[in-house]
Amino acid sequence: MSSGAEPARGTGGGWSRRRFVGVLAGAAVVTTVPAPAAPRTESAKATTAPTDVTPSPSAPVTPSTASSPTPRRLFLGTYTSVDGGGKGIGLATYDPATGGITATGTLTKIADPSYLAVHPNGRTLYSVNERQEGGVTAVRLADNRVLGARSTGGAGPCHLSVHPSGRWLLSANYTSGSVAVHPIGASGALGERTDLVTHSSPAPGPGQEGPHAHQFVTSPDGGHVLAVDLGTDTVYTYRLAPSKGTLAEVSQAHTRPGAGPRHLTFHPAGRFAYLANEVDNTVVVCAYDPPSGRLTPGDPQSTGTGEGTNYPAQLLVTSDGSYAYLANRGHNSLTRYAVEADGARLRLLDTVPVGGDFPRHIAFSPDEGLLFAANQRSGTVSVFHVDEQSGELRLAGAPFASPVAVCALPL
Image 1 (cartoon, one colour):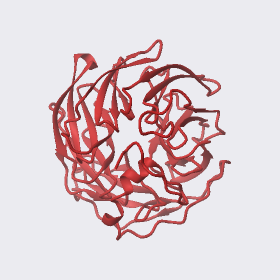
Image 2 (cartoon, rainbow, N blue to C red):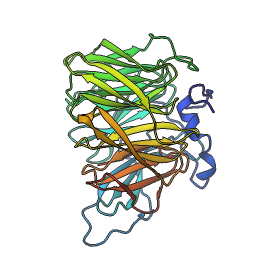
Image 3 (cartoon, rainbow, N blue to C red):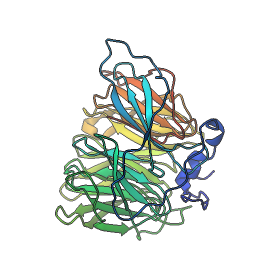
Image 4 (tube, rainbow, N blue to C red):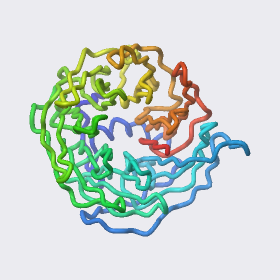
């Protein structure tokens, strides 16, 4: 199963290489989940929809006690157009002390919400609609009201992030290899797209048929936005015009051919970043120059997963810059690194079993006391306690069942 040459499948939502890799073995483990809702046709024009939440009777993984802190909200991304998938964004709460998760319902009428992000003010949730005619959707968190959807102008959007200013939504269209910018209004709703850039150079890497934008994020200093493209083995740096929302390319950083870069995470000091390469199963420390936006990749290094097939997914770095964690799909583990030399070096410490199959996405709780892993093929979310001093991970309990879990966003 070559990660770089996955076949496409024409379905209502449109299949991409990245979906096929994860879903291939998923149906067998979630066949008891109700069939997904019919695909929804997204409108390019933003509209306001009434709250549509289906309650859930599911029990928590670990029962809360009377002395436990107030439960916090957790949002779960899935695919709605695959067998055994979800029916929208999963709604849940978690106990910040025990890690126990309780399902509270589903926010329906949102198609293929495979990646989620929240506005810096905490009032609005954003979701991709990973379909052939890609879109992004805004949800007001005060009452779970859908504020509308906008077209991304591309196919298979798989990642989004909110600019630190709170004024712009950045999204990456995997299938069409493009990145898009949408304005965010005072209410959190999205305006018409202000820019769309397709990665046309360099040529696709070995085994790739075209560009595949996999991530679009802002540098810690806020001066540049960076797009990671798996298909062209390139990280593109752009300047984002703060008043117009338009993009101007300023540099390109190239990995070795066939690396398949997927996910970039910055060290909090902002002078280094860490790149997970999906296809060649490596990580790379990159130097970053804030004034120019130039990213300089170093040498590839081990994920600690051995010789078997493995597709690195996502990297996290603690806010104090001491530890980094990598999700490994295939090896089904989390790799822990010590961050050294003020961010310039990663030292591999260990790997721990993730407790599920194909960990697609990992995220910290706001206090970084917990780490959540969304396991796509097993349809589960694993929760780990994070030791503040050593960075060691300890499984918090039995994984929580969530159909085709591809994103877990704790607030």
